[in-house]
Length: 324
Ligand code: PBG
Image (cartoon, rainbow, N blue to C red):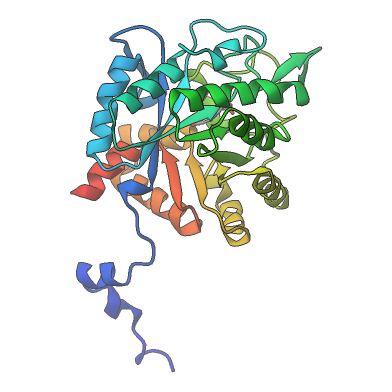
């Protein structure tokens, strides 16, 4: 039996009915907000390609954290701009580097926020790659120890979650081992498991000053054409001890996100990356798209595809809109 017996529009007649049958909830508690911390005091500089997103010193960062807590956002993920870069990226595990100080500060303030840190070397190395470089090659195994050191230093500062984004093989296992060895058995790992080599990271690399100084990241980040391989990466990371996995970017990889959600029984996140954010912002500024409706539709779509939580630069705006 079909029309006229069946009329799907009956359930779309009022907001009451629509919200009663809505399949995918979206809430501020689904979001992690990415933030960039730099050295110094009273520094707050907007990233030109990411309106509303700032490179800021720890004092300013802490002010924004209070706002984020008030908005009901689940937490933050931190990226650092070091004072100086070197071949090995040694500021990545320095005790008094911006990320470590920021974690300490937000923990000391006892804010109700999940504090995650991005674990990678690209922001800290002079060559801008995510691992150790020798003769123009990014070496896998020698990078693991450095990444593990960075993760332990974040844990020591008080991070709840460490999130390796480097895409070296075996890094989740190396980090889990190092955390446990140092006594941080309760610090969780959010693995950037299916991280693609994407043009959508462009604005982020301005924000984090982490563009590779030669070549690209194709020898370690995934080929955008591959979906089955994502399931393999996810399975390996879970075997190595990942507590949560992530797909990144989000929009061009919703099929991957959906497949991962179906394949695993641990929480799955998606990273709505800088380029995805910049596109919405640019179009909205031109009057070409309604920012609020566009962003909420995107975030709902990412949740519907299978994300339990979303790392997004829209988090603050979306939380405000959802709360109205
Ligand atoms: C570090 C890292 C990157 C992003 C998150 N962690 C950049 C990259 O891999 O080049 C991108 C995030 C974004 O675009 O918002 N490896």
